[in-house]
Amino acid sequence: MSLTQDLTLILQGFKALGDPIRLEILERLRAQELCVCELCDVLDLKQSKLSFHLKILKESELVLTRQEGRWIYYRLNLAQFIALESYLAEYRRFGEILPARPCAD
Image (cartoon, rainbow, N blue to C red):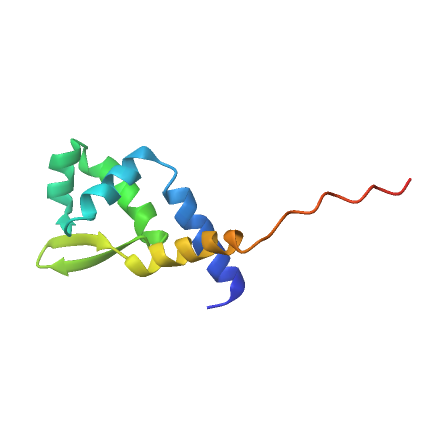
């Protein structure tokens, strides 16, 4: 994967995390994988609205899917969470941020 693809995926991941419904979906998936019907029930969402949010989570690679018969099961993709965490951890490495140099007139 190229640097541009990596950064695009990081950006998609953080955007996906910026929605309360998607955060609630991820919270539900922390304990176990769930199918769409189970997520609809526990989140009290219509399937069309849930599918929209699951699509974003899948595109950002925060969730993975597994099909069993006609059901699709969703689970967290821990590798992508580690990638986001690693990206943020890079900022801890910075020391003191230097002040800007005066601009030349």
